[in-house]
Amino acid sequence: MITNLFLLYDPFGDALSPVSLIVVGITAWLFLRGLKIHARCLGRVSGWRRTVFFVGLAAVLVATNGPLPPLGHSLFSVHQAEHLLLRLAGPLLIAVSQPWLVLQAGLKREWRRRLALIGRARIPRFLALPASATSLLIGALFVWQIPVIYALAQRIAAVEALAHLSMALAGLWYFAMLFDPRDPPEGARRGARLMSGFVVIVSNIFLGSLTTLKEVPLYGSEIIAANGGRLRALADETIGGYVIWVPSSMVLIVAIILVLNGWNAAEERRWTSRYELMRKSNAAALEFPETAEELRLKVEKPNRDMGRTLALGAFAMFMIVMITVVTIVYALG
Image (tube, rainbow, N blue to C red; front, side, top):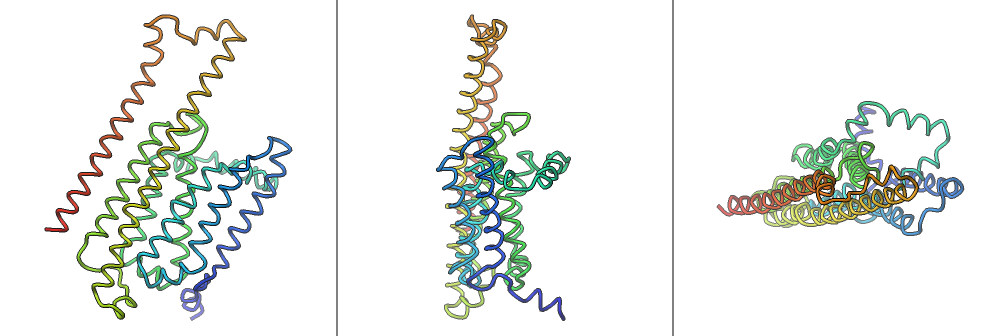
């Protein structure tokens, strides 16, 4: 009896989420605390990074508080807007601000030591691979869009909280990998990061197009069906599918642009580092090619990797178009 009451009781409330307020509040407090320590040891954090971080936290609050959660229980389209903020927009903004060192600085020394040990474990290292992080992000979308599981999350508050938490964590984990400023082997390969963005876009378009173009409602919008009949419920789910299809893909396009910008910045850092070494050491001057053959050997592998990445990107965009066309033809047929 007590278990049933706990599962049916909504810990978030219809328009106010104490859980999200507490989690976001603690995160903001750690960040502000870490800013002071970071300023003393590593220098001040730029204003734009602080602003973007708090805008990302605000996106999470908007998705879990205010008018969106109550509407999301009756409107499938609004619920997908919540997912967009929790899974993509909010985590992207937070990860772009690179708050990890600042947040670690806000922790006590013992917690920092434990966090470092966890980071060196085998499972977190495996999950940090581009393929693993991408799979987690896509899985967080597809699993919770299964009609039976979606309906369960709508009825049981604890399941809905788990859904929102998994989406936010999967988004943070993915974008932390994507925007990691470190070069390999500490960070993921730039080409793999770029391809992961295309893979996520294809998954968004695939699921979004199927949801948009289907001819029957699947998500049991009882309130909508009671008020406006089957057509209104189907129209609501069509709008929700469009949210998965287009706005979500646009967020990933922004992420891909940022990855390319980070790739260029990494190349500039490496070139500057080599140039500084050459000025200090004659041996380091060997890093700079002096003949056409040496230049060819020097740039052959990076150019080949870039060519493969761009070719795979073009293939991914081709597949996006083909999947969209096939889906439309299938739906109209």
